[in-house]
Every structure is written in C-alpha cells, then in structure tokens.
Image (cartoon, rainbow, N blue to C red; front, top):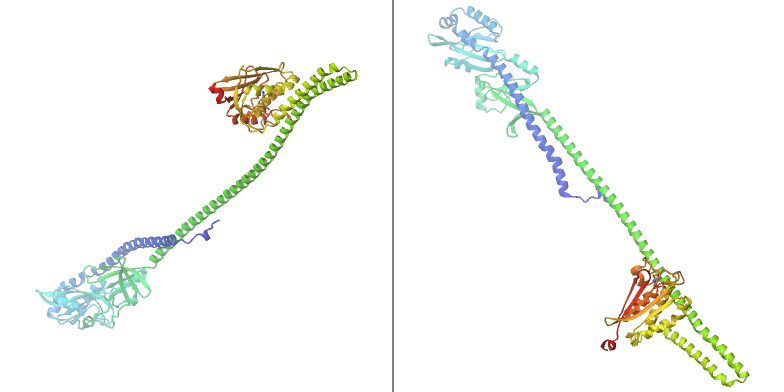
Length: 591
Ligand code: ADP
C-alpha cells in the first residue's frame, strides 16, 4: 500500500504549491494595502482640509487689522507731524484687545517702531529697529506683507501682517499686526494627530510635535541660512536638519520616515502664503492590516492545500485497500480454480480406471455368454453321442454288427456338428483379424443368426430373415461384421424381455450400389434419454453386470472402418431399427 510519505517528491508540484502559498497572500496583501492607502489618503485629505481651514481662518481673521490702523486719521497725522505718542499707544492697545491679536504697532519710514499696543510692557516694541523685516520692506513698497518669524524681544513665534500707511499718496509708515499661533499648535498637539506647516525653505514653523519645530526638512545651504539670519526670522534657532526623508511608494503615495517612525504624508499649499501643510498618518495599522490579511490568506490556503492532500491520501488509501481486497479475491478464485483443476484431474483418473474396469467387465460378460452358448451347443450333441455310443456297445455285446454302422454314422454326424460349432466359435474369437477380403454378406448374416439361434429359441423370439437370392459381395473383415450383427441381435433380445410375442426382423437389400442390412424389433425402442449418444462408449441402460455400453460403439467403429454408415431410429408404433450400410465390392458393382 502506497502511503503519502512514500509518494515520490514532485518538484514542479512543490514549486506550484509554494508559489500559491506565498504568491496569493502577497498579492492579496498588496491589494489590501492599496485599498487601505486610498482610504487613508481620503481621510488624510479630509483632515488636511479641516486643519488648513482652521489655520486660514485664524490668519484671515486678522488680515484687516493693519489696514484698519493705516486708515485711522490720528495715526497718519501722528506719523506725518509727530507729537504725543500716548493717545496712539492707547488706541493701538484697545484695537489689539478687541481683535485678540498678539501685538499691533506702527513703524516709521526709518523702520523704527513709534507706537505699539504693548508700549507699557517691559519688553515693549517702542524704538525697535525692524527695517530688516521683509514685511516692513514689502509694505514700504506699497504691498501688504506677510511673514512668519520669531520675535526679537521675547523670542515668541508669530505671523506678521503689514499694511502701508499713506498721506496723500505717500507712504509715511507701516501698520503691523502680530498673531501668535502657539494656541493653535497646542490644540493640534492635544488632538493627538501628527502634522506640520513648513515655509518655502522647508523650515517647520508650526507642528504638533514640539521637537520638530524650527527644523528643516532638507538641509539648507549657507546662502539661504545667511538670508534667514539677516532677516532675523528665527533668531536663536540653529535650523538643523530634521533627520527624516520622504520617498514615493507604489507610484502614488509619499512615505515620510523619521527614526523608526513611518508615516503616509499628504501635503497641500496654504492659499495666500508660501506655506505648505502636511498631515502624517502612522503606517503601523497599515502594516498590521496587510500582514493580518496576508497571514490569514496564507493559513487558509495552507489549510485548503493540507485538506486536499489529506483527502487525496485518504482516496489513495481507500483505492489501495479496495485493490488489496480485489487481489485477495482473485487469489481466492485462483486457489479455487487450482483445486477444481486438481479435482477434475483426479475424477478423470478415476473415470479412466473405472472405464478400464468396465472394459474388463464387458469382456468377462461376453466370455460368460459365450461359455453358456458353447456349453449349450455342445451339450446336446455330446449327450446324443453318448446315447449312440451306449447303443453301439449294446449292439457289440449282442453281436448285431450290421446295425452298428448306421449308428456310428450318426455319431460321426454329431462330431461334424460339434466341429462346426467350435469352428464358428474359433472364427468369432479371431476378431482382431485385419484381413480385408471379399465375402458374401448373406453368409455372414446366416452365420450370426446361426450363432444366436439357441438364444432366440430360449427367449422364445421369432426371427424373420429376408435376403436376396444372389450373393451380396462386400469387402472387409467378415468376423468383425458378424460380431456387429450378433451384438444387434443380443441388444434386441435384451430389449424384448418384457414384450409379448417378441419378434426380430433382419432384412438385407441393395440400395444405390450399397448393401443395406436392417435389424428391427417390436420392443420399447431406444430410450429417449440416450438419443444421439447411443454410439458413444459406456452409454447403457442395462443393469450393472449385464451391459457395459461398449457394444454399439465398437460396432460403429467396425462399420466405419469398412467405409459404411451405422444409423438408429425408433419405429412406430414401437421398436428400434438399426441399419448398417456398406459399399458393395467393385466386382459386384461392375456385375
Ligand atoms: P450395452 O448393450 O452394454 O448396454 P450397447 O452399446 O450395445 O451396450 O447398447 C447401448 C444401449 O442402447 C443399451 O443399453 C440400450 O439402452 C440401447 N439399445 C441398444 N439396442 C436397443 C434396442 N434394440 N432396443 C432398445 N434399446 C436398445
């Protein structure tokens, strides 16, 4: 029986299984990752929009402030004509308070702060030289200025918005509002999400991660560093490079790596500024989900393959079990057949022995019959001869010699008769003779009838003999043909035992150049169960010891040897008829 363990290693099948086991989970993982990333990006975009809107609204909220201040007549008069700064400072204080900005102030054309909302605070801006600030320069050029930077007095980061102050078309100063963005940052931090805002140089200006603040996304060259330094944009900060890098994955998604942390990054520009806002989604759940699905697929596939292998193994086992049962069955049948063959051989052997015994018995029965016939044929003339001899002795005593001669003649006749009997017996005994001589069939019939005469008489059977007047010449062994006829008479006598007025007919005739001997009786006929098998050896209906079923088969052979035909048929209303047809000798045919 072939077990799974004995199965030959099939390299291509193994490779295929391996490919399915690894390839399908990998592909499914990829698909899941792709879908999940798209989900994440959609969510990121929504979050980005939200954060961007809050930042924008925060900035827009104060956009109008410098303009409002620049439009105030008191302010422009103060800048044009000079005078007491206190009312202006108070005005700016009130404006700042109402608007909720960090500081509002006015710069003269020389870049020096002349009035400020924090005029009475220790670190106030009064008399500060801010001519280097880009927002001042922009406003002096007649534009609105925007700038994110760290304050030079207390180092507080803020967003600066500026507007030129005009007098009859000439710029006489600049109105500025500083907005602190740290509260916004705090809200972001508390929200637990990761995001940052970077300026056009890649400097992170706002972020939910304090450690990233004032770090650069890409290393800055010295020219750029000098420019930033000159503007005192981020005084006191080194603007170190944040050890992170961004790369594009799967052709469409940006991956942001910092240390061991990995994020999916979505970035969008903030309208009206040169800033960009980036939202970061941790990649942990993405990998967890991808790995989870891939592993589940792997396990399920493995289970499916194992189940299939198990079922295949079971099917093979069942098949080989069935084959083993069939093999056993065939072995049993073979064994049975061998026994039957053996049995048949033994039976055949026994049959042969029985056949030989029967042949022997047949011979003995024929011998017995013959002995009876001889005894009967000879007893009667012997008794008569004894009587005649006794008479002769009496005649000698009485000296009646003239009567002696005729009596001795009679004794001599009896001797002749006995010689005749023994002569025919001798010729009957010479049955193995193979002489093929021409003879008159009528003589052979007469001889056979003569030999059976005593039997006909004993059994009270009437014999009717009809033969042509001229000789019927045939060629063959006469003794053997007589044996055939005697056997026919014997069988007829046996069949007639129960018949009243038993009769046997013998008729010799010539038909189509052939001699035809017909022997029929008025007995019961050949039993039906024998039918066609009547000429086969050992077919008999007679009692054991009486018949051996060889007579007709031997006779059949004798007739065939003479080139003749031997047939049997039952007659109506009763009786059996045997016919022997033998070709005539060429001499007779010509005559
Ligand atoms: P056996 O005489 O030893 O039986 P035979 O071969 O001579 O063997 O005969 C075979 C059988 O044929 C007989 O047993 C008998 O049944 C049948 N048979 C032969 N001659 C006759 C007949 N004249 N009438 C009826 N049956 C016959």
